[in-house]
Length: 282
Length: 174
Image (tube, rainbow over all chains, first blue to last red; front, top):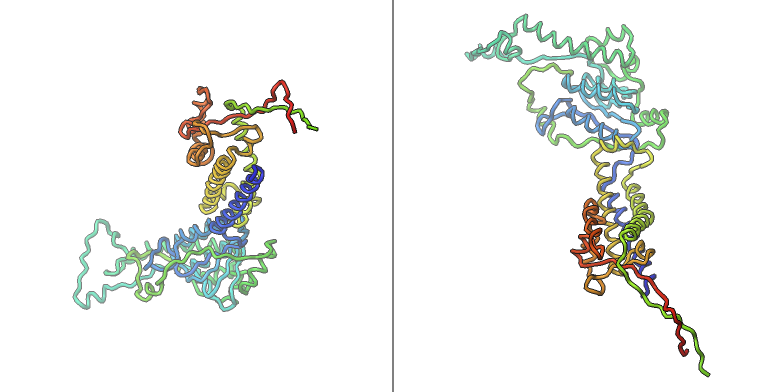
């Protein structure tokens, strides 16, 4: 076999190597090709979550959005919300981050998108919900059960050993004083003020609407639409139509949410909460 | 009746290849590899990985671990592919295409065809471990046979072949 034949054979073999290796590695390392990244927000919104705590952490949501934004294929973000709300800071972190995104963000409220979840939705450019969705619940709660009376009934005493007068504020084992109530309500009102101002600014709400929603009521999808809390009633088709109106063609949606908890219902059944009484959008 | 032809005798003269020619041959090999193998590889790889280079923003790519790993993987594979190109051509033919253009050949220092092991050793610093190539080349400037450290380890030398024609032609019976 002369040298020219050998050169041709080597060329062909190397070319095959290149084609096969490139194809296989490309398929292995493929990034999502869709131009719309779906981020699912399901369950309670918390700062940190683990297997038993349930819900979805703000860190996880923001990380998923960042991953989506760093994919050059992604032209828009779809927040698929099915959450009753969650912790104040966690909800705020996600809302502030969503507000800072410079790509089109559309929020689709599914069954429920209330309280902290609605705060996040309000940060989006466009909100779509079903007419039967539950939203609203614009408010803050820091309610907790107090067992002082029950303990007294059964002869259980609470030995209060504290360095400061309000060190055990919010303890479930003694009655709350009026001063302590004022302190906690101060925190609650501060969080509520942020929540209301954020929603008012993002949604351009009227005074009448603000007054109505300030009592923290849940609001159905239809009423939310008439009040201006959402932009459109509908589902995924309306989401696609809106994205098309923004110049995004051939919409392909990829789910960027990793699976979170495998037993979220167990936590809800057992009613586990943290020991600290923390205000929450819930 | 006998027929005769005038023959111009040729002789192949081999001499140690200069570092300039060897460097030029390497550049030619890199260009050949880039156009015929690297570019198609990258195009196929990035197409299959759904990575649209034309829309890529460098800052966002660097922030995306997966995309950054794609780039790293393609870089590693390209280095290995170049290594295979160098080794396969030198082992099968005794030269790469760049060397062929400049009439260079790789030979064993002990005469004859170098072994596969030798070919592999001498090409590591030009591909996979290219970062040490500069240090690998330094001894070649001082050595009479222009051997890099890799050539010492592989027991190879690179020679330049030239065909020379003897002054007096000969007559041969056909």
